[in-house]
Length: 219
Length: 219
DNA sequence: CTCCGTTTGTTGAATTTTCAACATACTTTC
DNA sequence: GAAAGTATGTTGAAAATTCAACAAACGGAG
Image 1: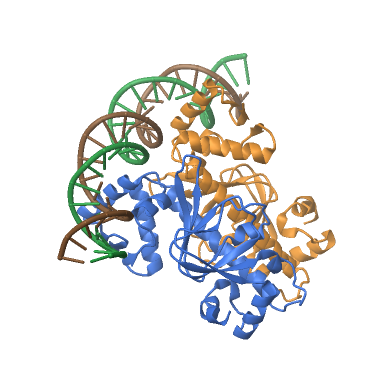
Image 2: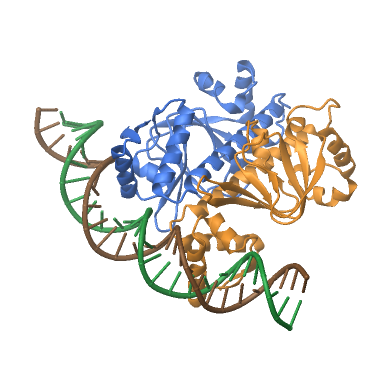
């Protein structure tokens, strides 16, 4: 587990927890690491929501596919991020989403019941862990508000611009990369890919933005 | 405060907390009650996210209005529900949403810093409160996933049917009332009101649903 | 009961999005 | 470095949504 310490210390779940205690804690939590190749399923819709994940390396996407095969991307998962903790914490029977590896990745899986219910060793850091989980869930809620701010816009142009402005703000620069290719961006914004490409071209010709593939610049 | 005990005991935030302790706790938390008339603003966008609310009686809506004046309804708030706790818990500077009373209502306001940081009296129920808050935030996350499931659908018909099926499931019956009038439902589903009315008529004539104003029935 | 304000339903035109099909640009593999 | 595969851009037709304007139904006040 020691090789993952650096990335785990960046994980919001372990805030205020010392390195030495973190290693002990991972034992208490029964955490294990699994690797997934690109396009492999990490969690699949309908499976029991027993574990949550922590992305150690690589990236993944939380998606939802309806019965017509339309894919909707809920969010992307980057290293050090916790995912699917809401379903596990709320103790729902089944995960309502699918998580797919976007590139080869390593994931730490934690049995959520070990976090929610005091472990046999009366691990002293339990309370801190629950506090961190609470903070993390609050941050996720805010992320959802942002996603709703984006997708509630009625036109492709407005959705795109709202998304790009939020990304610029997050990057702290008008020049930034996004974690999606065109099809993925369309599935995240809930719009048509070709219409999105057309809109990007239009914004480029109007001098509002510059872009090349995943790189964007607000002018 | 005693007159509010019955409704507060139904609030998820006070799960596993005895009635006698609940009253003491409200003192520790510096909770206060305010009343709002219909259409009055309970929290407004951009104001400091210091307090969260508990709806004691009446109802409200969490909304977002963009610079064109388009209203989007994020969710409705019913009695015993906690609201705006995510912004307060994540300690963001400003609330990104507006909360408007939908009818005359009474709201309990709690300073979130009293919940997050141990009170001077070392209130024994603090940990339980944080645990409940965590559970509640997880449940809210799931609510957002449902909202995204609804609004990610591309057509008015699919959004409406997805919403109605979730409401039927929640009500445990194919016959139920929704908390929105037509304009509000349109603002919740992120579609045009007249188009929504047309779609409802169409579904009625096709024998898929029955409806009258806020009452719906899946056939 | 009637009036008046509000909500809901209806319609057609304008706009926008989606869809399908193809062209072009880029990447990876051998 | 050529070939194959993938991603992006472009276009026009079809479909859906939005918009505006009005009609009908409903509910509350007096």
